[in-house]
Image 1: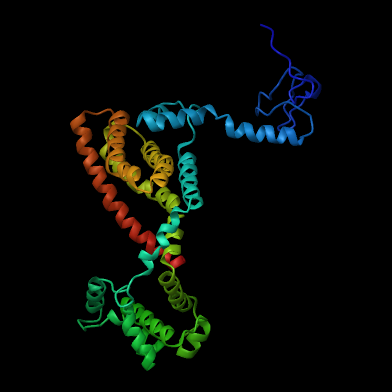
Image 2: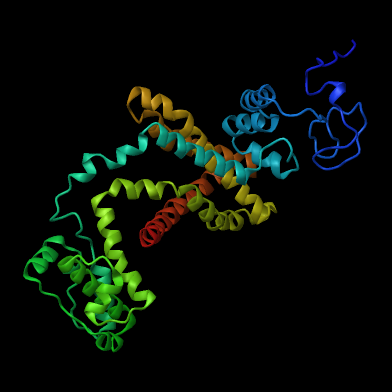
Length: 370
């Protein structure tokens, strides 16, 4: 059958063909519709509004074959997508690292557009009584300071309890410690005393400028001292609007998981050392697991929103996710059911403990940089 010639007004028409690629400079024949070197369309026609919108709609409605294969195998063939990718079928699938970041970022964008993030700022978080909202379990810090200070008891509760700080503000009493006295203390005790002093001073006087506050306290105007004092304002912002801080943390989750993956991959590398997979190939497997989770959450967002429930999301983390992880381990590493189940339990435990510890550090670092 004779191939149909493009319309004269089409960008692919012979009248617009060139003899050199406008993108990479590759010599072309007049019969070349696309450049064999960079794949750009061989056309010298100026870009019109019609051409622009045709390309725009095409990029949305016509899915790339790699994206189709990635979605299909990621959702319905757990572990197989990783096995195919590491065995050499690279052009068939999207890059696992870039795909993970893309789908996770898209999920949070969609979540924000649908207003789901507002649930973190609802009245449940705001209606916390001020006399208990900032009382933490400080036994470990108390014992550490006591050890470094030669067994002397140091009451650290007033630093965190708002009712104590309110009384100090009303009475304008501050437990002043000079810079010279701080220099004689251990590192941990000195840090705590400085933190406590700056907190009490801020609570009593509400001076937001660190330089002014340090001058009033007769402390050195160093970068470290300014940073510690500025954390008073940070804590106040978090207390006033915890929902905004949680949303700020959530926006960093894709990058947090990206940097958490190498730690988690270390256990796969040790546990499956006889399988001769490289460390990077274990990481690809984990990124495929994370991509599935975000893709599933993205697909379940609309049903949960319409039903005004968390049924699908709950099912994902309680049933679908664990089963998918087990099947992915079995399909990729191809071991027996009992061996896979034992390793599934071990890796799930490591993931839970490791992620919990990393989350605490992540939130603390995020708060310090907020």
